[in-house]
Length: 260
Length: 91
Image (cartoon, rainbow over all chains, first blue to last red; front, side, top):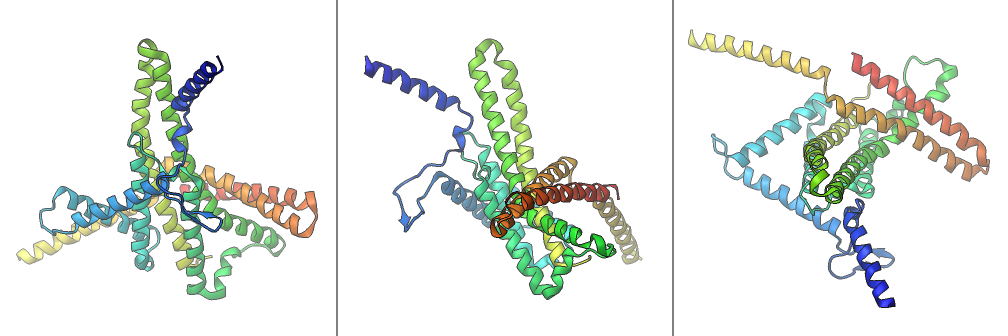
């Protein structure tokens, strides 16, 4: 009797797990547990997909730059197009002074783009739907841009917080507001990417669940909706990588060309 | 003569390219990107203001006051930021 009950409970739990839209975001360990002190350094599915997307970037760009034929092959075209796309984006938003940081912004854009795009494959894990990953990327950008600003301008970088042409009475409030805006950069940068990816993937799972629960009679409507959502999600995956990279360029522009 | 004609053609092409760039500068990101940017920045300003107030409250022991003040300062900063981006969009 009790074993029967347990079985039905387990089956129900399995059904809930299958239709639970948040189940896709679960991080689990692959392989042995690695612990250094209190820190858990085990290899998880998140790290697996990071490795896969970095390897994919390496493979695509190595193949693309191997043969420099005048009439480019498809993969060479892809590599060259993405190169010109990012270099144009940098020169448009941050100017010629930002050229030395091309390698960093290019790899950042490609990493976010490939992680987002790998997440669109069914059963794949979306690395960028975890806030700790995006926050780590964003805080790295924030700290390095701050360091670059202090190296380029010294203490004068603090002028960023004091806009010109403000009456003295309002100055304390304005300075506090400017400091809050500066500190909110990593948070808005990371939350934007994370929220977009997580919301989109949850919505796709929810509509997929509707298809199953409504069956062959009523399932066609959510099915067509989820086809449309897939297209939208691919757009969002590209757009968010683009926005992430372009905002990095804008922050870099603030650090390089101080114009307050 | 052929060299000259090439040069003039190059000039015309460059002019066209620079015009296209000028047009593109007016709308650097797509509108959906700007919408996401503004909404998350508004929230982020409020969150950062509140966090600063919370930390200052803890260090000075003035429990409810600084968090309240900095929450509203964060709201002001967020709204001011939206106004700034809207002004930039209208340029």
